[in-house]
Image 1 (cartoon, rainbow, N blue to C red):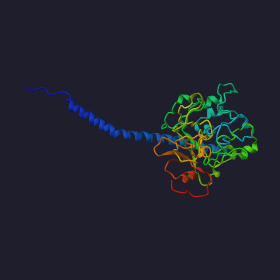
Image 2 (cartoon, rainbow, N blue to C red):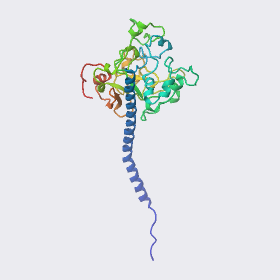
Image 3 (cartoon, one colour):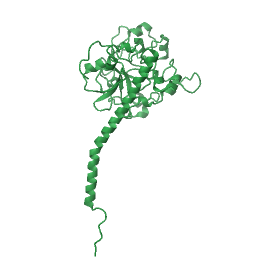
Image 4 (spheres, one colour):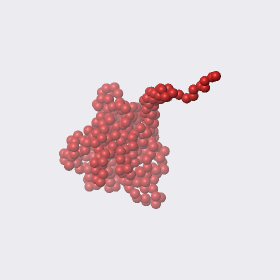
Length: 344
């Protein structure tokens, strides 16, 4: 008489199989994470490549680089009254300017530059105002690696999230007239100031994409070479020690990057401070060097050890945040006559 063969596994055999599967998963997870990170980085670099190509196409058509809004002092919003200063100020960011070159021609034709980006006026009665346009999230301005902003529901719905910002190079906060800089006395009013004083109180931006009051900038303005000058890069929602104010005071927020507004922290960054500076400092807490220390002005990302950038020639590079600060600042400037201080 034959014994019936045993079906199934014993408990010990089952536990061994589970243990082997767990080990395999443990070995695979880091590889999967690396693949995901590499894919997200490539997608982000492709977005920056498109932005760089759009800048080149804009330059070919307009024979100039787009101006990065008004940002007279590097803070605050523009006002319709500024338009009366002979085009001295532009109210919107360079991202809005290059929309036609990012396959967003329909929105670009509807945008009215004589109004603020969030203005709700609809002069032609078609239901499309600047506010309608600038509430739109555009994939080309979003990195798939960037985390969802914390407390996202509290952000101003007029300012869609973005992951990239233009490089203003170095930046110096100034006051009007002879007044000295402090946390309480900087004059950021642009509605009552005269044209001459406005121009005299500019910020010392020396990047590729700068304020309109610096005059017409072209690729020829980039005297040290397009392949050695930063055009735009990552600015992810990674800020720390930054909070909402008003009714939502003390609720943490992680950034304010948007493709709608131009001034530092929103649609432009500087190379004053190291890449991946994530801590926010207010003017009140750092009155004399706030603009050189607060992470709100820094290129920053969730990519390990650095950020993606598109350079003036349209090439895209990943720069490590261990780069020497003087070299990083050299890359941010459009007009340095010196060679790079060190390799990068």
